[in-house]
Length: 547
Image (cartoon, rainbow, N blue to C red; front, side, top):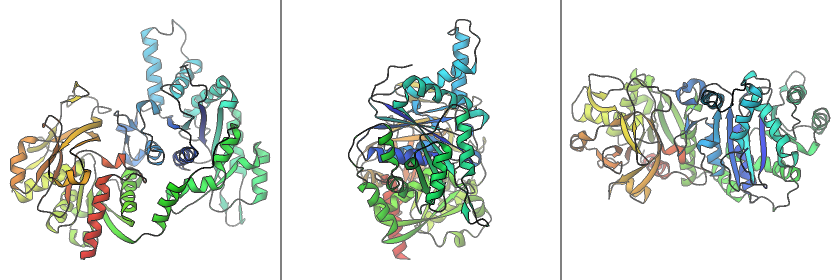
């Protein structure tokens, strides 16, 4: 294993009973309240699925793909980690079984194992352990979330790896936190502890004794049930933490701290530290509970049947509302609904329109219809990634009259205003891709710099002329259409440093109309809202007062 700072301690977060209990949110919240006690934290996600990353998964199956500065396509839980802790995630903070096995097989082919028979133990488990302890500096706590639930066949190597790591490092440097469900049975009129007991027993079968239980519940856990859980799960009663439902996720750190979660962690590691300063979270929650008003924003997407596909986007809009002391009510609109007509009826009650990213032809006409409505009715508009491309195509078609203007993603024989990008520069090196190459990890991914046009709306929004934002796309607006777009009232107000790739477009003839090729939502945080969302919401609030 790598040389470790002796002060670094590890907290392993597992889940049982059912999925979707909120391990990612629990990990992020615990990290944030440990920060409020003055500790330095790092968060990591270990996903047991065989995909190398979620980049080629359907949003309907996996939800959002979160992208880091260094271009890693990762689970949406990394978005929770960043939003709650402010610590930028890296490639070394996300792994999958696909990545682990890929490394093991590459080493075997290279001869690194000196002819050994390759097995799950020790070769796969050693690779998992190496991931957990690699690329660390002076962190006080490393929180590692294991995806899935205890008992999943895919997760067994991970449980064995963290069991071994606790043995290697010593129990004084490790802690196991297990998240379970306490279901309420209305006919019995009580919470049932048996699912939690069975989940813990299953974990114990793998040689892991949890040190803390985080119990999701619809109602407070009675003292008798808490005692029963502690007794049958072999755990301190004070370490049975109830996790009640809250009205918004930013209440979770406050709720967990009130239940004594961070104190229990400090007690486990015998740490003496000041109480948590939770004023940052208290201020955010206070704003959410008592806003000065409400504004309705339309999000016209193609994955709205699973809102997890737009997790960061929804949160970034909330952050823009927090900055303006307004509640943002999102009207999720399936782009295909706009293709069936009645665009005016569907969009008439909103004060801002956002068209997000996406892939494929489904819903394209609806997104273009939304852009047209925003342009003609002077409604504040924000287009992101594919949404920016649709804004460009809408101008070419409906303002300039070039009806076959399109993207080659959808039509190879069009007026290719948007086309496949086959090469670009990344950190001084040329990246080359081919049309028929692999889909996974072959997009323009991660942070790229952009230069903003002096005097533009977007330069005013950012307050500077050089920015860095995260990308995830294969197709680019063709810079050769710059002059034509300007004739149609749209300017390219941000480009790559070499001037070849349009990064931002806007309409000077419109109160607030901006399209960006990148994903600003990925960098927004409740205590540091992204300026594009702050200003978009501000413009939408102004629009709402005009109605």
